[in-house]
Amino acid sequence: MAKEVSDLDVDDVITEEKLSHYLSLTKAARAKATPIHDEGSPQSSQLKVMMRMADDYASDALHFKNNGDFVRAFGAINYAHAWIDAAVKLRLLDGHGDDTLFTLP
Image (cartoon, rainbow, N blue to C red):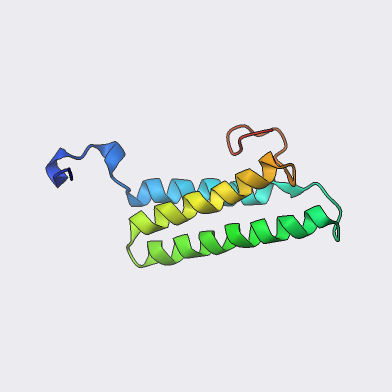
């Protein structure tokens, strides 16, 4: 059953501030995580695919945000962060011990 707008509490609403917070977290995660394997290795090729997905979803999130579609933007930025987090978990990226940005191995 759908909630009426008057029944929503602050945790049920994607505000611009909340969305900006998650965009910033994902940007920080993307900047902090570094490749573990040498360029040209099979793992490096796998990582490129994963980071392309992360970057594409982050780009989509900004597009949706700029068009006022905060729900799709929130979904897209969470997918972007999940790709980065998965690369850390699979030990393709080094999360440098940051258990705030990443689910560490």
